[in-house]
Structures are given as C-alpha cells and as structure tokens.
Length: 367
Image 1: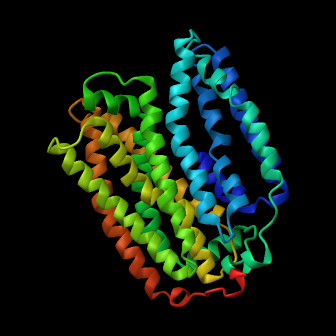
Image 2: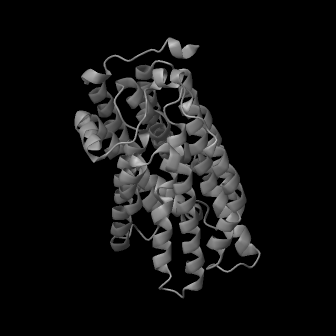
Image 3: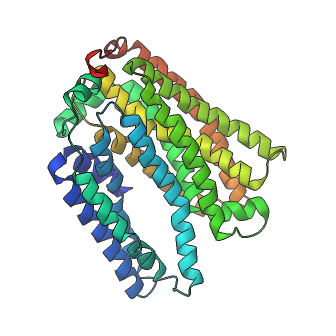
C-alpha cells in the first residue's frame, strides 16, 4: 500500500532515460529481501516481506511508462496486463513445484524469484531499446511528460468528480482482485472441498489472461479517443455485470469450481484491466492535458490497496462464518453492484465535462 502512495511521486516524475535502471534496482532490492527473509528466523523475518513489497509495487508503473501515448498502447498494455494475470497463477505453480522438489518454505520465494532473473535481464534490455513515441503517436494520443506535485494537484482538480467515482470503483475492484489472488488456495478449497492441484492456479489464469488480452486490446481499433474512452467504461460495467451473473450461476449450482473461477476472474479483470490499458490512456488523449498514465494509475492503486488493507484488518476481527469462500462471495456481490452504479455515474460525469465533449480524430496519424 505504501509503495503505491510512493509511486504517485516516483512513477509520475521518472524520466524515460532513468526507467530501466530504476526498474532493475527495484527488482534487485526485492529479491535481496527474499534472501534475507530466508536467513532471518521467524517471526522477525516478516519485516523482509514488508521490504519486498515496497520496490515491487512500483515496477508495473515504470514498465507501463514505455507503452503509453502510442497508437497501439491498448494492445501493448493489454499484453502487459495479461502477463501479470497469468504470472499470478503461474508463479504459484512454480512455487509449489520448488516446494515439491524439497525446497523449504523459507527459501522457496528466493529460489522462485531467482529462476526468473535470466528472462528479466533479457527483457529489461529490450525495454531499453524501445524508441520514443513517434510524431504520429503524439498527434493521435498527445505528448506524455513527467508531472511535479503542482501539476498533479491541478489535474485532479480539473476532473475531480469523475476521477473520484472511478477511483471509488477501482478500490472495490482492487480489494476483490487482491483477495482472489492472495487467497486463491482457500477459495479453491471452499469451492471443491479439497486442496487444489498446483497446476490449476496457472490454468485458470491463462484462460482469463488470453480472454482479457483479446477484449482489452481490441479497443486499439477505435481511433476516436472519446468513443474509445466511453467504450472502455462500458466494458468495465460489463465486467461487473458478468461478475453478478457468475455469482448467481454459482449459487444455483449451474457452474463448477473451475468455470466459476474463470468467469469471476474475467468479470473482475475486465474493469481492472480497462483502467490500466485504456480508460486513463484515452482520458489523456481525449483532453490533450499534460501528464502521464503513471500518475493516474498510482493514484487509483494507492487507495485501492488502502481499501484492501482495511478489509483484511476488519476480517481478522469479524469472522464470516469461519468460511473464507463465504467472505469472498460477499465481497464479490458488493463489488459487482457498487461498481455498476459508480462507473455509470462516472461516465455521466465525464460526458458532461467541457473538456471531454469533443475529441480529436487524428487524420494525420493514420498514415
């Protein structure tokens, strides 16, 4: 949570020339904390898990900075987001694999992280070779620049109502997404009455990731920034509706555990990824306002994780029938119904804002 609040400043103010170096420093610090976690006896090693999260929370924003402000940003960002959806399940399978080989629970996080160092080095180098947005990209999507504190405050004031409604919905989405990711094992046990096989975590998320990649990436086909912005909001509302339908089907016994987890994942990640890939991207392109997606993303993320922390602290005091699945289903219902209302009001607010009533359709950018 603190990492996201730090990221509002760090990610928003980082220049393109410093991104790769900062990215490698952050990941190295996170891996080093896992090494110290293994060496430090419990319960004192919990401090290293806290330290691990501080740098990792800013990695996504730095990578997203390479992709924003381009004519194909949605497709690129959808691929990036699909990768962390898939990774969420795959890394659990990798961790379970190392545990099966006899690696201890304390050393498993470090060993699993170490196994990803070679591809990290390769892809970080590839990121360093990405050219800046072209002139056609700037015409189509507006120029993106670092934002200082005064610029961030000014941007928020100009779109306060719409952003507040959007962030409120995003808080609920982040809470449920984090619960689903961090307590996947407990949810699977509640659904099928037994522990899930290691590979099931990755299998369900691969399906969700591929569907999200296609749906979110397709927004790139809409050249009109205003139309794309409201289409993305509609997609987010559609995800909340799918979540409600999935819950009704599960209650009626119409879907099995695997299908339910895939449908809930799809309904949850549609609005979550729409924010990451297109809503903030097209808001900047539509208004031609100075700024970057990193600021908006971390503004939403920081309060989203604050909400998650509050829910987890509350659950430790108030047990919901002792059944984690029951607690998860309750959160899903709250998120689905509230997000439908909040995102609808958000769309109305932006539709009425003077800066969003018209949008540039860049003829030059089609060349």
